Image 1 (cartoon, rainbow, N blue to C red):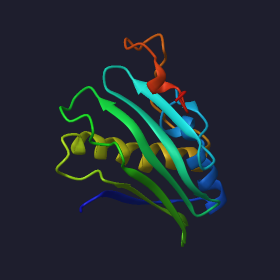
Image 2: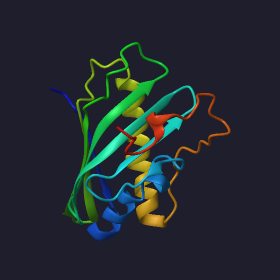
Image 3: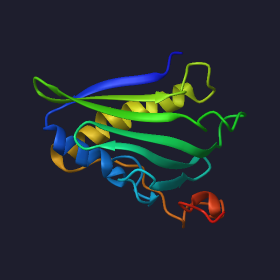
Length: 164
């Protein structure tokens, strides 16, 4: 498979880059609900009429690796709403001459997906620009949405660890 992957070098040590990755609200989406740091944590967010997702943290190795599992997902611009469901999103960190190399892979995000171009372009920005800026300067560029701007009712989809 041709899973989406990108590698960026961030001019900080692995501990700083790892901390930035875990601060998901500061580089990806400011309206994330739920915890994002420990295995078993679940978080969710919505971008009005575009994207809503719920993700479970499955692996955390301090300074080296973070892995997420997409538990549920919906896009406002594709016909197949299952495209991300079951995908694994992995951040792998390794020392580099100028700091820390971060290899980001979304296992399952492939060119055949209807969302591939939009999603890969978004990841290019959020990983190479927003995450890097957060780690290097303390200021990321996350998507900013609020419940006030969302026209879709917030239901169990958006609540981490919804009742069974």
